[in-house]
Image 1 (cartoon, rainbow, N blue to C red):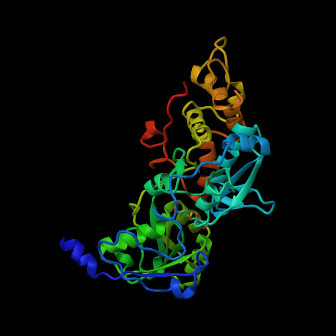
Image 2 (image 1 turned 180 degrees about the horizontal axis):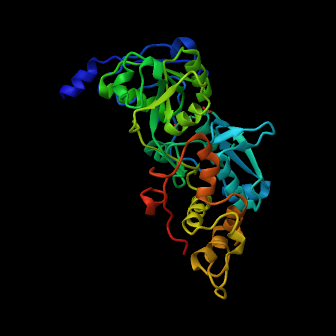
Image 3 (image 1 turned 120 degrees about the vertical axis):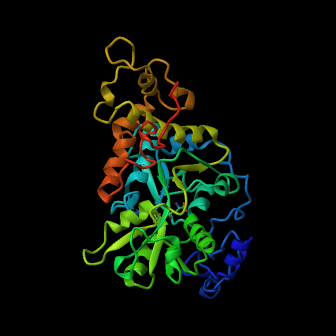
Length: 385
Ligand SMILES: N[C@@H](CCC(=O)N[C@@H](CS)C(=O)NCC(=O)O)C(=O)O
């Protein structure tokens, strides 16, 4: 109670700009947030539990699998500007960890990892685009939350990257890796609208009694520009996004990411419309297939050599089933029997996808939740049987 009263006295000024087309006047109203206001509302954000009719989202008639098969390509919603996760290329395609999971779905469904049209979406646009059938699946640094899962009308495939929100500042402004959330008191923090990020930082600052000015912009690269220009003291988002952007810093401008323990849990993974079980299962098992292959040391280089019937040395029944051999289950899901073999051949297993996209920006699996479950991490798949 005392803590709540103390927090009541803390003033959280929220200044939102350039998001969602709302007016500057509305957006720049500073809001005093009382202790029992658990949600700081930022103009332009669509990430609220009640921003949707809720529970009425299907895909209107035929399932998404039929739509994708008829179209002959997958439309995958990505960020397009999330370093190492999805970066739009000059030809309109995208590269990165999330982009590779789009390719994996296309390989499973269409037998061709390149049969993907990437649709770049801001955080604030993404859920409407999915609900309005503009995309087949959303793979865009998207955190699985209760309201998104239950109220907005979405289903979350397994987490592909366990993340957590952190903050980035400059060492010459006194920030270090050991700085805490309380150290942001008095700072202008920038992030992008329509995210869990803006809510976590508002709540977190309240909890520690820090007064902050939160400026939300449309995309995270815009927040980075303001940070580089010095109009924002700090930027905040998922730790992966900060590490990815830190990889681009100038040699004479040292940025630090803190606090060491993230201020939130951000489980990121693919998202589909709810009430489309077949499509949900496909997207879930594409992720699981990449994990099971990794668990068994099956890679894009050796996937083609896996025995699919029990006549050779090295026969592994689970891999045989997963790749279309004896006891396969992919045809029960509306896919070709070799759907997951194509995923591993054309895109790779979980570790390959992680390593090639995320290691170059300084993100590694070892010692994190993204390590395999039998090495202390949380990357786990149920059995393929
Ligand atoms: N995981 C959070 C944040 C997602 C987010 O927008 N992340 C940033 C930082 S990685 C991003 O995607 N930026 C790229 C952009 O704004 O286009 C959420 O689901 O709300």
